[in-house]
Length: 469
Image 1 (cartoon, rainbow, N blue to C red):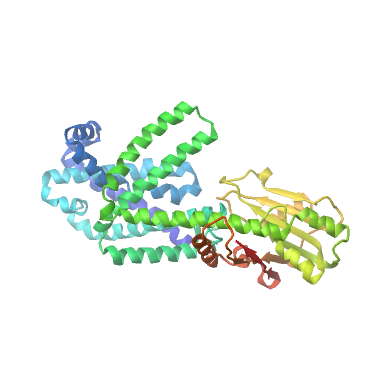
Image 2: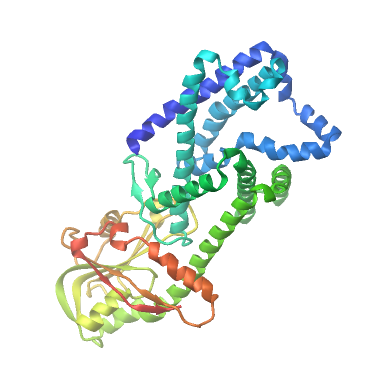
């Protein structure tokens, strides 16, 4: 993926350059088409033909399709690359090409069916078709990459099950591959192709999807600005009303086409929303049941230290992964209760993901000896933003620098313990039965924790228990 990805940038530069040159070729024939840059023509059209102008917005919005995927694909690079890519590459090339198409139609109105390729010189049309095909593939890859990034963030925030993620670049941590999402997208695309059979039939669905995405994103942006409180409320309200006015008008113009295919993105969005919220709520119920089984880690350490729990300490180091901060890992409790043994050096590791993209280095790690410096048990809490990659070896290396009980940790000999609970659906309140069954079904796509955390399979023990929801 990394090797192929290196070709994407140059190809897209050639693509946008070709768009701009073709546009300049048309504008040179009819420079008066540059008058279209003035917004007063749009205002005049709106005043003279209000209904027709409103309905035409459903088609006009298609000229910016792809903008909603730009931030999703490049979000992990930051806002500056997004701004530069849009204002210095994509936007001027697109404007020039659309102006060029308008100039071409002045000469030949009969070419309205396909002005894009007719604008290209005859000798360059076959190369342009090849270039357009490559650009289409790359644009699709941008959407796929955006889906990978969003899926990983949703997983880290607790709205999706743990998915297997492969990092495909040693230089860019945000360049990832999520197999489950990739196959899901392939199935969805094949279904759309078979069901609609023509891209023109998907135009209404695409318009609703794009304007809906932009509306949700803009709304959440201004809500975030309000919650953060770093700008005056009046400024947020004014800016929000200004932007949302335009966005909502475009959305309304596209919602007119709900019956023509616009229902599809609404249905897909509703299904995704149900899955996300069901997983979130189901995870809360499962974690509550898990916490009751696990019990407080501090009480467990106190019982071990007071010898109320008979246990034989054996040489070696064990790392227990824990979902909840302050609770005893189920694998650790089961090991003590059933095997009556515990390693001399124990690390209880918890990973936290607050709803922020990145965490300051000084807030990354917290090491707690649970009040006893001589029992060999340390609790390590690592905090990562939802955009940050996590590495267990790196976490444990940092933990040693903070100071762990039991001396240096040898990752080549340490044993790892993970909990693998099974769900049992009951009639208890908290969530509808059909959502409980949906939650249980969704857990089946959860990635193997051994593979997800890149743990040594030969030195990792998985211990299960039953949790009621």
